[in-house]
Image (cartoon, rainbow, N blue to C red; front, side):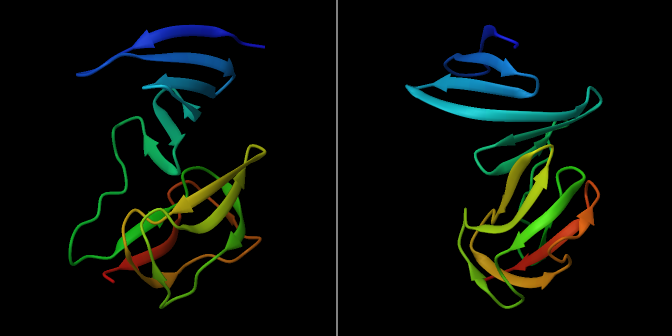
Length: 139
């Protein structure tokens, strides 16, 4: 079992980061403990934290007003649950799709309030990284 710890800080208070297993980290910040999961190669890193998926290059699901927001698979995975359908109103943080990858469930959450414009996946389907799962439009 891996057990290493270090302090990190960028433009603010430092945080304690403890690697508790390969790809699994505990981040202690302002009295809270949060789990962060990291997958992928050194040149294509995926970070799953607080219901959001980020890429090491800094990309995250940013909402461009007027354009549908596409939610994509963070890594190759199986779609295990679709909790919305086209036309469903959703709120920021609501789980829309649940994927399973590397023995983990990965909830895909709404980045903002909106309405599901289209669903592009099916339960049981294997999807590749960056596959479009669904589109969100304005509320």
